[in-house]
Image (cartoon, rainbow, N blue to C red; front, side, top):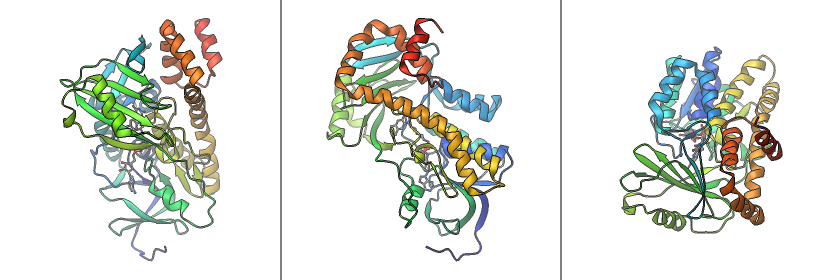
Length: 392
Ligand SMILES: Cc1cc2nc3c(=O)[nH]c(=O)nc-3n(C[C@H](O)[C@H](O)[C@H](O)COP(=O)(O)OP(=O)(O)OC[C@H]3O[C@@H](n4cnc5c(N)ncnc54)[C@H](O)[C@@H]3O)c2cc1C
């Protein structure tokens, strides 16, 4: 495709997608005085299927990016509950009920994403919403929107989620050698009213679906129920979800249509930068496979992309890509580290070992959650055990 329209908008950085990865990239660029534009096919506030678990490391990242007042505003507008209990289940049998060092924060993604995009606009950021990117002329660095308008860019940040259009278009370009991420997992989720299911805490259920987990999160007036189907596992995912809801005792099942979304669970791109294009958030596969955590990785990868552009944009696009690969490598490491635990849980004897010993080790599970999941922690399992034993 070649773009001929000369009257197109010009921007240094075009960000496709205004979820947490795109908005955090835009906020960081605006704060550094770099010209950018976010394009989102949806109009904010928009619905986003997400359980909304907002870990300690996500909170630190967001506070550092926004600053105290704006951070407080986002949290006031979007936090639905702060849960004190973290509960693991084997099927419908409770394995361990523990109390992490800090309460677990759960946000409403509709409000959260809208607040971030509002903040981006309030500091001068340009947003085109309600119109998606349809095509991209990668050679001439020009994106064509669904309404026919064009946007010319120097750098393109692909922040358009798990089913990234940018990724799809780039993979269809001949002879790029660009490696797509692997197939994503399917998640189903419903938010039921508390009168139809009363459930406390943040609950993870093993052995409800093959090799993965289901969840029940208490979120104020709602209770969020969901499950993950890993690629290649053959089972009827809708039937599994309905069965799970029945076993939980959800009333008025007909009131709650099942909704699904893809999650790039353990699919981080081996190379999230290509030519002048940086992949962030779900588009780059930045999701932790043990927990499905993606908000932290989305915000942080978006911020790293902005910093990489700011750090070396006076050099070549190649240098920006190199810089982004370097900065985002710590996220890749964290994700691969999480992948190891997910892999262990897929091995039946290790899972049985875990099921057998978890009930007597509630304090360790709480320590594991508070260090490995809530914080940025590169420690291997033995080091986490060692630090727990010596009380570090
Ligand atoms: C069921 C479920 C539960 C989850 N629970 C959690 C959780 O509890 N905690 C957690 O940390 N993570 C969770 N995640 C993961 C988390 O939601 C994602 O990792 C996170 O939303 C990624 O943010 P993002 O900005 O990369 O993408 P998104 O939030 O998906 O945003 C992408 C944006 O791109 C826009 N877009 C798409 N295509 C185009 C186009 N062609 N042109 C323009 N715009 C486009 C979309 O409209 C959207 O606004 C969950 C995910 C799912 C599916």
